[in-house]
Length: 178
Image 1 (cartoon, one colour):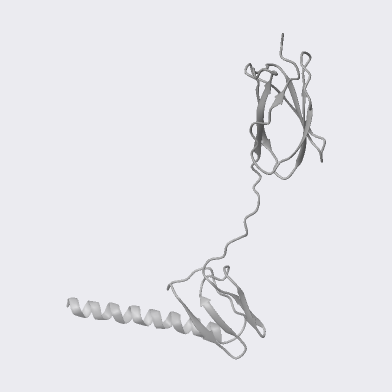
Image 2 (cartoon, helix red, strand yellow):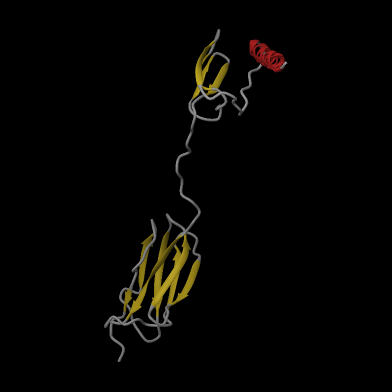
């Protein structure tokens, strides 16, 4: 009895598979062609028709190289990678404001101006002279200026073309604090 049930089940499954294959073959005989994003079997093959040849992995129509001939074209292959592009994430510009003796100077104003847009950002140096500007766009040119009521700096302005994270962009006062 068990063998009979298995035989009937196998016959039904085989009939269903053949029925699906017949529909697929019938769909490929004429009219428009559409390869879906899904694939049941993993593997590719070569298909040749009257006016077209397709080589690659079926079901991966969004990847690889575009192949075509006559009125038909198919994108074949398994993986396609997009070219790397800069991300929107910004970088930082940081450094210290120091006396001529190398001690940090607190509460010094620093201004970072985008040379293209004119947008200006402000930072104050910490008690040890550190400052930092975050989320700075890569590929832009900036003008960084330091200003203090007690100290003079030479140069007091620098121009920076930002290509990556910048650290140790330091300003040194001309004369040590007395």
